[in-house]
Image (cartoon, rainbow, N blue to C red; front, side, top):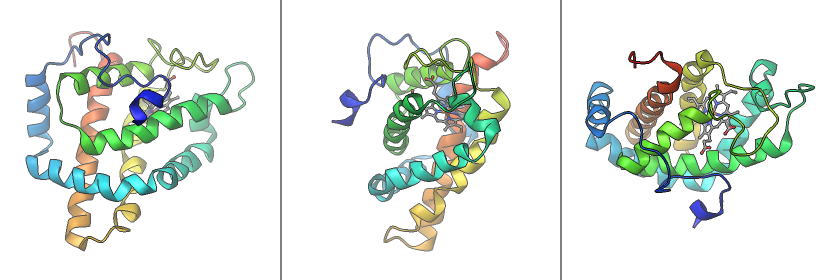
Length: 197
Ligand code: HEM
């Protein structure tokens, strides 16, 4: 099983601290995003279509980051600004697992707790720690929000590769986007002033 073989991956680790967001607050966020049981079914369908294409999807995302100096710098060595191949590779493995998890999510306490950990891993609190990477201290918050667009838009052609109707592709894509927005909101917690989230 992938989970045990991906270094630094901690979904389901009972030693993870609990998220400061409650399950009740999570349900209200889902309601606000119009993320329904139907979306959860379409996410499962999307998972089946995406799973065999994970490496190709990661190639597109990493190609996008790699093509932009203002983005690749977050994966680069702090000392000289050169991309850190080990760091890129280790994060890529967890990113692949994250695709699977996004389509399988059941929005329970363990999932919520790992959301908080992933958020922290983009901030000064915990970036670089998992991989002992000598990189810059944080991903600037503005890019977390901006990234929703490419992470959403780039999966559509991959979803269209499955044997599903255009209507199902549209619904899978909408469900994927809602889930990415939900997760980006949860990852915002450590960037937001105390008491304001
Ligand atoms: C880590 C997704 C925004 C740079 C990760 C991981 C995922 C992910 C799944 C691995 C989490 C884990 O450790 O299990 C996303 C998504 C984003 C987003 C969905 C926005 C919608 C960004 C942006 C950058 C970035 C804009 C900047 C280029 C990084 C870095 C790590 C990381 C450097 C490694 C952090 C560490 O040291 O552990 N991201 N990310 N991310 N992401 Fe993002």
